[in-house]
Length: 441
Image (cartoon, rainbow, N blue to C red; front, side):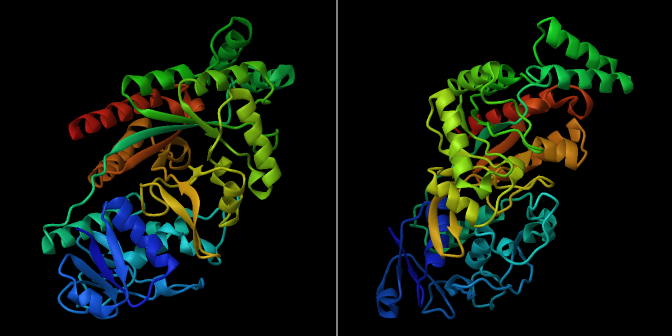
């Protein structure tokens, strides 16, 4: 049975939001009508999204956001209701005290990121300016929780309605921006490294560098086989993002022409999905993007359709428009470097909405839940503290049966310094996710 929705008018924003919440998250078939008589005579499950109810249907009072076409500062009021937090207060006639659809669109579109704001030193939108952070729910996929609450309301009023099923899944993504610690760095760089370690009395590093360069010891950043082994052991899907851009202040990987680096890329591409890790300045030039993608495709023989921007650095909507033009259909850059959680309020992949043109695009965004460097470097958490935080976010994602995407680096498993204990973190997260998945089957 289809759900019939009445609204006084439709819009691109409205259908986009309904398609995600009702279609993608709840698996509902639905139709929209602007005809009151047709709606009133319908005998099946129905709801209205309008200023006033038509009859005794499930009624959600609407704010104006989904019927607007411009971008203006929004009047934000944090409304708490049954462990949910929304932004647009409505009357007591509505099934909820806030407009969950307008609140969802505000987060999904990253509306506030289009407004005037102060960027960080890398010209990125600051997590501290996020409504999700200010409201205290950045770590929870609030839009997914909205959908669960809506499911409960619809099911209570119309028990005959059938919903789709979603499943929890853990996905490991790995950024490869420093393939080796010592190998391939050249005489000058390694000599500087020896001298620096000597002045710091870091004899362990001197010994390790010597053994790698002269005794054929495995480079400490060459953790690819270990990562893949853990993923295989726990049946976890993986995707590696390789940086093959030219050397710059922020792009310090080995040249893409370096033989052992090429061998790593080819070997990993045969065992895992791969994507491009577009360089720091690439988002301002389609030509640079295309060149880097072609490099990776030529080396691996794999068609590249996925990206993650280096330093999570991009602009809205220009970067996504560029990705679409050059054939990238999946982007994994959605998250903050300084805070774990869900930048757009959801853990579920969704299509980017271009607010300038007011149109849904063909670029699907894959939000990540946490990043290893966020926890260890920015937040200065120990391995045990990081694991606790990761497992808590995993629990919330499991509650909404969504995908749980982690962002790791091949260089984070050296078991030295801030990375002591992180091999255990990586395997424990995979093991716990596998246990959750097994219980769901």
